[in-house]
Amino acid sequence: MTLIEVLLVVLMVAVLMAALAPVVRIVQQGWEAGAQRLEALQNARVGMEEMTRKLRQSPRITAVSGPADTAGYIEFRDRDNVLVRFRFNPVSGNIDYGPSGSESPLAGPVNGLTLVCYDGSGAQLPAPVNGGSVRAVSIVFTAVAPAGEATVAVSSKVFLRAMALNSVVINEIMYKSPGDPPQKKEWIELYNPGE
Image (cartoon, rainbow, N blue to C red; front, side, top):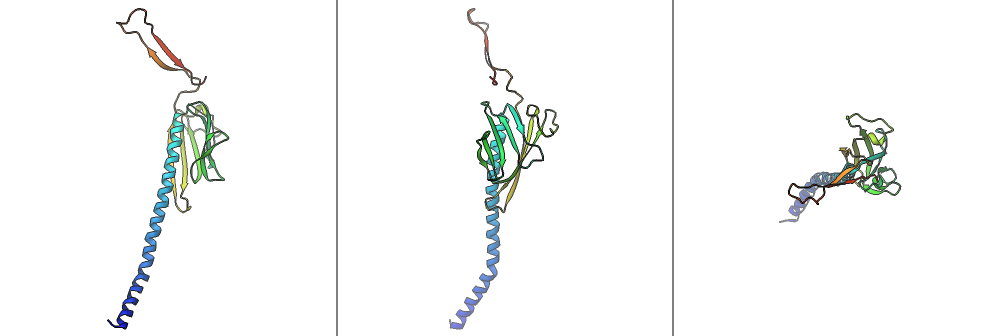
């Protein structure tokens, strides 16, 4: 092979690589965007699952932001009767959760948090919301990928327990079977989660 032939082969390989470089870059950018979108979706999924689980267990909503407020919050009693809150933190861009006044990051970054409340008949409740009448909450937020290029909108509707904190629950029943001795007694155990 002569020097001219080698130079021609090198030139052809260089032209081919120059033509393929933009295609490879486009594929790489698509892969990175997909990975960012997947990470944003995973963060959003984890945050939404935690929010729906905690709200579903709540016996009472105490305060909620209005449906037009994108920097939303919802304050409620958890199953242990502790006053807790989910809120959008505009400084960090996260959804925070914890006892009111000492929340810590739960999910993010997000572009906001919108909460819409519904009563027992399914009618939307206007702001300000009376927490005792809330039976369902619609949660909407948009998760943002760490690089900020991809967003994923997630939403869920949570139906709350109907039990209020001042209700009484039958916790345990011990009944007397027909063959039991006469000295065996029947009894029920009552529990008031508000006291």
